[in-house]
Image 1 (cartoon, rainbow, N blue to C red):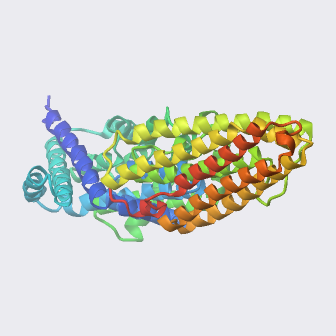
Image 2: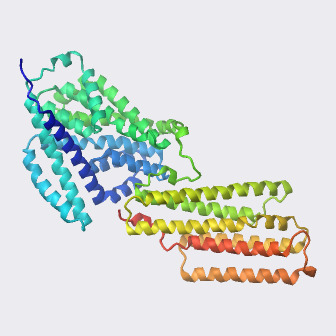
Image 3: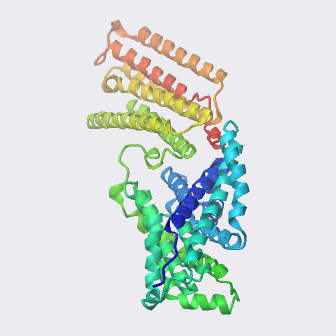
Length: 550
């Protein structure tokens, strides 16, 4: 009986080294150019075709569709990219992963790759270990280690499979049909969680004549379907957006895989007889690329419809909470998390501004709100709900801040996050100050005394004018001079209004409202506006987020 000379441990070690190399390659590239690629993903995904091209390019460079998907999820959750365009990026990422197969097929099986890996490992490991104080050189070291390990692991797998070539009869499996190889591709990819590693295994088997080109293509189709398990697992306890992307990726690969499997014989025939690609390894990697291209061509016209359909799914998995942006963004992607945090802080400012105007029973166009008794009581109840919402958002932002601190932040990122909390606190204090005088404002609006109505009108006019000015100045940036002028204006208003009140009180008494209620309304309104000035007086412009280094 013929024994099979197959070194299982050598094969498994090669697979482990290959995956570890991918890990180092990804980390090195992320450190060297991660921020640039994040900007690229954010800026060039405003259209479907741009999303596909960008997803393909970034994945081809970073060699990690998982990392690209994580970034897309962060942008999607932060409202910086639509689901429709994010689908384009993920579909493009499937195409970008085929670059690994091209590198392996063109270099890995034509050179003595174990010898090729030694210089990369030597230079890379020394750089990584000895240049810890030089982040750029350390990241280059990680990249070189990854490159070296990639080819060393490939050599281990190739050698172990070559040893068994000619000793294994796959005729039994061949008689079962190509579907068995499709199933094998799915199962192995699910187990090792890497389509790139699976493609290397298939290339090694094809190179050793263990399988035919038809069988290898079937396994590659299975690998493309099996790789969706990574995102499925990651999305199980994730947000609705993560589940939508995972489901879309499964649909994409299932449909593309099914179509290509049914047309497998025709695709192989076309490649050999029309394109004249006769070398099996090159034929396989070419077909791997064609399979993903066919999927993109099929789905491109239907991306808007798929997006609309997916937006209606997984509603129950929508993140809970009152925040709008941060609850959808993974804090691990720190610079994207900061953009989401910036959007959330801007939203809180708008809510507080609206809250102040509502409490003062006035609109931003300086028109009074309806003042009927029923409307006043309803408004008071709604205002308390709005204030509680602001407090809930404050708690969520504080928790999110704590989560962000668990990851390595640069000094500028740490300063920015701390500044956000200071601004948030000023906004919430402003809301509290105005909340405290809701009963006083109600008394003044219901009063039959002309003086109370006049003072309330002064407070309303002052608040509307200053909130409008504050919004404009906040966009342009405020210097010490502008802040000093505002503080002087608030002080003058407070003094002049109190003076006006006391000079015009008939017999030191008012009808239906106390003097203390009016003075309290004046004082708290001014205090609320002063706190808002503090919240927009941000020493770090939000535009600086774009230049933060990882």
